[in-house]
Image (cartoon, rainbow, N blue to C red; front, top):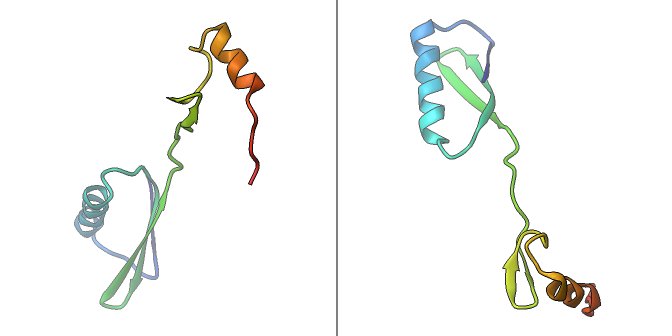
Length: 87
């Protein structure tokens, strides 16, 4: 995680406390960058997240699938031959 302090200086202990706070608050996300903006007695925390990979799941021929690699030849032909509706 990249940590940047702008607008002033803060002690390392305070910086570590802000990092800990963000890691706990956003524990289900991956933090890429944390900017700590100092404005007198006030501090703004700007957090940028790393993109999270996801799997696309579709309902095809009655099954919820991500990819077609586990379908047998008959199911793959059924997918190929089906009528696709574009919205």
